[in-house]
Length: 64
Image (cartoon, rainbow, N blue to C red; front, top):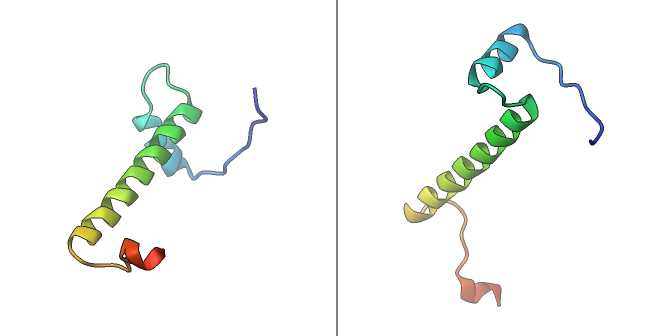
């Protein structure tokens, strides 16, 4: 097993994480799921902006 790291949390934040955690799920698994979901949501926001014509996007031909 890889080395463990400690992350300081407020009591409130720990309780919020605890409430999200499912029975049998480790905090490592919970955080992995939260990170994955955050990344998916971030990508979805970028895609919505692209569809709306917002953001800095380049035509593929410009990249050649």
